[in-house]
Length: 469
Image (tube, rainbow, N blue to C red; front, side, top):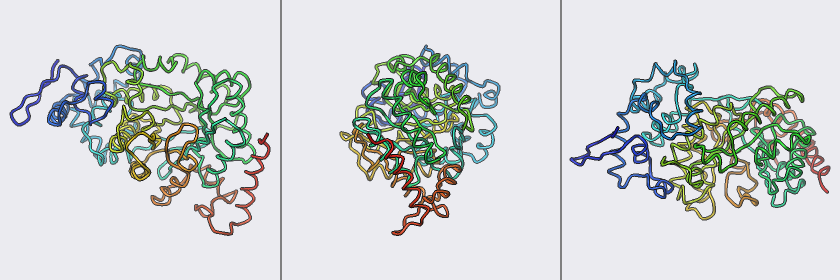
């Protein structure tokens, strides 16, 4: 079925929904590279007008690509709840999402009736303000060792990456985050060495720090999920099982990801948790996504990168994750060319994830060959804090010395929390008070910190000393 739209006497024809979705997307360098974007701003506007009149039923019935991700999305779809909104057009659904009454229905399970492609179509019709307003009221609460996602909470992942995976260097970066009140989302390291022995050593090192200082938080070593499972079998403690995922079967295959194996891995970690104790919930997965990943794998199937990203969110939803993170500017300028495209992609990814019921965080980042800087990072951070983002990154000095990209620091996170009146996860906030890093909900930052704060810092240093070679 083709779609057409007439704009000031000029008629635009779109062969099918796949083409219409691509033409209606905001400008992205990745879509230009794939040849799916609008060929002019007039065509982009015409595509948006045509898309606004497409019914949600048409989107659900259309097969964007024949693969296991599509099959998973269809199995996961709540068709009973969908019946109440099936006749709405995308334009009408956009208005519905922005209506204050939408939240109660969404909380009552309506998010399970929303497919990734519906979320993508809605995002294409939204400006930045809409994307912020549409997600700000949607709270996705998850539990592992603590509770993430409640209203008024902005979590932070400490990212203590080290060029040689040196445990003492990793631990020092952990301290840098903890004394700033960060680390409630996860203490998560990207390892240089993906060997089972190295990953297991890092899991043990971070686990020992958490155990010694008593912080209610999670650890994760972001190796390939099969390596993490091998480390688990070798006796390493696994709090969260990580994997990068994408929105097509082919792209996931390029990551070495199989949906069945992911499900089996999740069950293995759940069984591990039940044997260890200390967990307050059964959400054990940590996923990372990002616009452009399917295109970079040459496995986008003719879909625009926003729609592929939404489908990656559909994969994540099927595994009930504790955290999902859009690494929005990491993949490079071939996919998001500059700060404007990074900001747009970050707001889109956060909105779509929240609409689908995911605990969305965003790595507000850019690589050094992209037209972006610390000021544009600050701008997107503030927008995402307004939008109710679940968590951000805490990279020492905002500069990842192992991955060689720029992100947000613990100081940036602290500034966002103070500016918007946000706080860490409740269990983590209580711990910060108990050890004296926080006093009355605020960081103990005076020139003469109290005895409790000094003792807590000494305890952290002691944990590092034990790890030093």
